[in-house]
Image 1 (cartoon, one colour):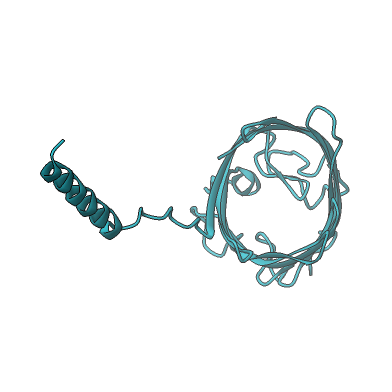
Image 2 (image 1 turned 45 degrees about the vertical axis):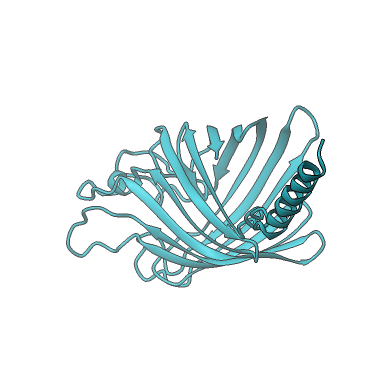
Amino acid sequence: MSRNTLAALALLTLCATAHANDAPAAAEAPAASDFNLTANVTLASQYRYRGLMQSNNQPAVQGGFDLTHASGFYLGNWNSSISWLGDTNSEVSAPVEMDFYGGYKGSLTDNVPIDLGVLQYYYPGDYPSGYTSPDTTELYAGIGYGPVMFKYSLALTNLFGFADSKYSQYFDLSGNVDTGIWGLTVNAHVGRQIVRNVDNGSYTDWKLGLTKDFGQGLSVSLAYLDTNADRAVYTNTRGRDMGRATGLLSVTKAF
């Protein structure tokens, strides 16, 4: 190989190296977002809320989404088919419950979670003149220890259509214990609903059940629920005791 050829190769190598040094650095991977969006859909054998019938023992379709931030703040929406408003007044047509909520979840110390927020229950539909709106706004505060959570809710409006029931309260003690066997979790709950200015409107409800986690966001729950709600107050126009004992089966898929 001639001296001229070697010189030319050396020059090309220097040029290539110079261009490589001048080339822009490879693009960095985008930083992970501080926001996380999840969704869920449920098919339930019926809808019960605080122990009371919401779908007259008929199946219910439910679902919603949650937007959370790394700081602990969150927003969400949850919806369900219902019939209880029409079941208690034939002039009402309101087949859907829509819940909107926002708050903050964090920890006071290790193993002591807290949850603070506001929840709006909204029931779009047609109502007769003079009907007390069932739409309800509640503030809530929860504190836990391990698998147990205590939550307190205070209604800032009338409670679910009860006239003059502002500042009604609900006390909720719940526990979810992972058995470590077959993906089974034991679910237990007892609650006390205080309804202001409604004779015999207050009651206690309780639940005991199991949830099976199948992975990939799929779970199945089976529970027994009961209340001591006064039948004279909580019997609908179809003659059904809205707080009577029942079993409830549900299938949930989270995304």
